[in-house]
Length: 350
Ligand code: PMP
Image (cartoon, rainbow, N blue to C red):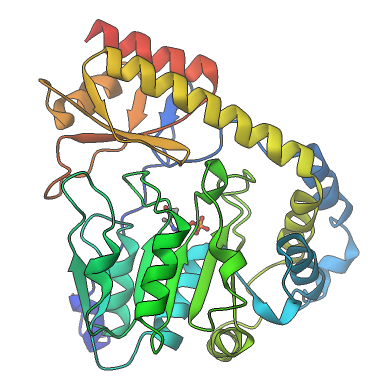
């Protein structure tokens, strides 16, 4: 606390990102990064941009990348908004579209950045409990609200909500923006982007950090009706006109162009996920059905906190949340098959 702080700052409760340890040789399964790395074409594209043009500002609207993403998802470039990671896109969404004097709704177990943005922008958030099996029940989103947001698949549960249920939530809230945060959708879910044309209140948010293995490049985007995108652009251009640098714009475009790499990488994660889930069940874990690049699991006898500690002593880091309902769970990112083997071997020894 300091007398120099703006009044709001002392009451902020910032997001705590997963640890990025400095130690080498750790099996790092704690922040849902992609184990396989980006396409070599991404590296080439970034290297080609390492030249004198770095003295010039990048394209503030990222037109070329927006065009590529629009073509890929069968929408128009006016329906695409780019940001410095989807976290930045989400921040602008909260500011631009969620301030209607009524609480916004999100699940009680979900991405922990949502309440942080509520705190930053003074928006009231109302948590909607997931069912006993940690699923979103669309019925619970038929109540007055100032907007709705949930990840699909949800994080950290990994559970996926079928699109017919997403549509049900959209239909019940025609006067509010419904944001579907699809950070993990490419690992087995179907994107709600195909619903954007019929639903002017739908905004879908995606990232290149997971399925395209570019967490270090910081690129995310939202797709929705041009009116929603314009609101985001107004906020962006009142905050930072150049959120994506030249390297990020070039690398992201190349990532979208290499469909084969993307497909192979997703297939690899999905098949490893099913293997890991099976092994964990054999070891006495209850594993929630996951369509993400992680699994969420609790052991029938051993405490989540102790397991996380004991794994760490063996050089394996997973994520444990000391929060209501989920304090016995571990969120385990799917790694390479060697990393997953190391995890299973360590758990057997425990
Ligand atoms: N949404 C969800 C549900 C996430 O888990 C994450 C990753 N922490 C993000 C958004 C943000 O991803 P990024 O900023 O890397 O695009």
